[in-house]
Length: 176
Length: 450
View 1 (cartoon, rainbow over the protein chains, first blue to last red):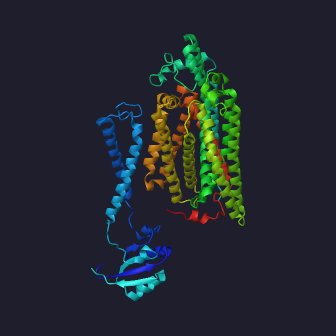
View 2 (view 1 turned 30 degrees about the horizontal axis):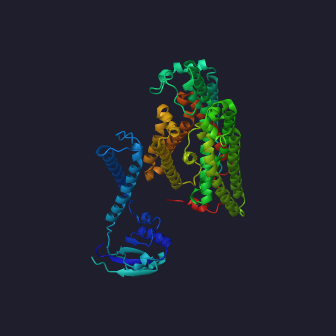
View 3 (view 1 turned 60 degrees about the vertical axis):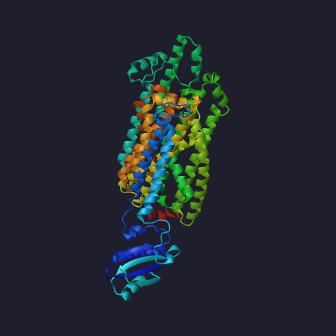
């Protein structure tokens, strides 16, 4: 990877991009990253990325939210200051459970949703005022950029990429 | 590729029908004919009683049977007679209610599948076209099943049993609440409404199937039939969502005529919708396992399983919304509904939540499980049993009270209608190619992948 060249390849159609990515990987070129203006269906599989584990995290966050909701409803409504719930001052959590179910549900969703978003930000290293990483601005509009690394001769690789439907090819020297 | 109804399956379904018929006949045969027999039966099965409820020293706290009011003025002797008669009616209702629950349950499956099919047609969804024939075949049961349900209802309101207490003039005479409802809740209105609703559903199913078959034959007019079915289905859904509410008030809610719940229609709808989708998934997987439907891939199963998962949660949402509002407001007419279920029906009532919510949610939450055939089948069986219990707990408390059981007649009736359902659905599958042709979205459906 050290002596390789970095190539910025631009496509202008998501279907062409998808086919090209499959082909590039089949020819054993290393794709560093793909920048797209919108999520392209099936691109993650074509790039060979491993599946997301955020759903597992979401489940655990939901469980945390459920537990927190259990604790706070019990503490607030039963232990700390027992309250008359709809004429049912039974001072028992279980007997008043139906009243707490919406809170249990909402807190589960709240925790799962918010912690999931925060996890996503942390995992993808996003934070406020972060500088954009996309090398060309067109990837927020109508261009699809594939960054790939190779040691092949430029003329050969350029011909190959043109055949795949690339509209623009820039060779960059690898800085590192 | 056409489906051929295998000999084994056909024989199996006919055996189911025969066994079920014998069980039902036995149930009717052993029903107590007199008050004395009924009381003897109660006494002999006393150990089987539910909790602390004892029949001798406790007046029936059953708001549904409003002749209870007169208990207060009656002498002990009269009280005893009245109670005996009440128990006799419950025993006489039992085989009827058992047949009614199963007839209704399998009818709901077909109707749920029909509604699901109509949603796909009306939304012009691309993915499910390869499943159209399966859905059409399951909905074939709507017409014969609807006829059976209608016959049971007709006999019931005309006095063959005491399932619908509001049809009894003696009860109505003492009951102001039912009297106030009688502008709606009367026998003629009931029969007319049931007929109109059933005819509407049957008509849609007949027409949509006819156009769907014509679309197969006629390549040139295929898009026309597609549009026709689109309009027909959209119209049907409007009719359906209104008529399903009316149906649920008449056929289920009026069993407990004092009780009311405004979201009951949606609750019944959610129950039939999820059962219908589940049976579509199970039938599809069964056919795939027999080597048919090779154009159905795991993404189609995945989508059906997502619906099973989602509508199960929807059902729970409605179940809980209904329960919580009634629990909170604590109005006597409303809470008796749940009190009778908690006291006499604890097991089926509480297992509803386990079968219809906990199992589907926990099992089908995982993406890979939704694509695994045997897991979908296992979950499907749980959901189907759960929704049978759902219909069971809607009908039984108001008809047989605490004399219920999941015994010979109940299981026999289930087996009978199961056999009939299989026979009709798979015969309908045989009648047309398994892949609907010429739909504009057929290629999208075949290549559907997630």
